[in-house]
Image (cartoon, rainbow, N blue to C red; front, side, top):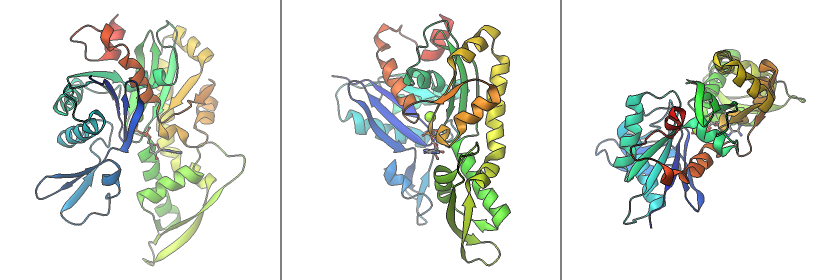
Length: 339
Ligand SMILES: Nc1ncnc2c1ncn2[C@@H]1O[C@H](COP(=O)(O)OP(=O)(O)O)[C@@H](O)[C@H]1O
Ligand SMILES: [Mg+2]
């Protein structure tokens, strides 16, 4: 029997949904290879452990870093490994739905489809990330009723207004969780003369980071290298400082949300103000993001339950529709929009 598969090809992680089973794989989108032979050594979590710790002949890379396929060959190999892991050596090739950012070009779309086919899929369908996120968040998107989804991932933030199962207005910017980490690294250097690594910055973000004032200030002792002495040093950082550090990237995300609202037809804006805004993706888990969006837009905002898995769950739910689809369909979201 062939198993249909839904894939959330995220910049930070890949989640794979198998029909009838649910999410069966959740691994970082990282590959490690031997530089000399080009041989693939590891994918996913095993490759992640190698990032920043490789000897000269091994490189570990994140092929989707900025939301699109920046390294096509690596993406294809990574997909092939993941598909092989979940499909095993089945005689039938699976049909695969892959989730893509809404801002993707036709060339990039083609690259994703080719990567899926090369990776062993019988047929590849695409679905736009915010559409999958909305379905995964349990929103009934088939009605003529406007919903806004803000998905903040690792490399991209996708904002979309959805009605009648299609994307009416959207924006995709290359500012998301990764850029918040980078902002922390810069802040620590500028304010404290302390050099911290990206992983430290990420854990600071997760532990004490916030984008809206917390009820109670939190602090964390952070280890790094003092830029003045070159020696290890510990600095205590507060959640208020984290808010300062995040200011620039967070403002860019807020501007993108605002610009999508501005371009949205008035009837749909009215719907959104009734239905509220739904946030998904790992980046939306930074403390206070929902409060900030609500404060700036005046629209009730919630972070979806299971925010990190929403997109994968949405691709999974759309697998049920594959049999009702015309042959030749490739982009599920755009097909719906034309109906
Ligand atoms: N609890 C958390 N608090 C804040 N940020 C988080 C949390 N968990 C994950 N993240 C961030 O979410 C981002 C990854 O989100 P994800 O939706 O998995 O991305 P993508 O869809 O691009 O693969 C990373 O930047 C990560 O640091
Ligand atoms: Mg994502």
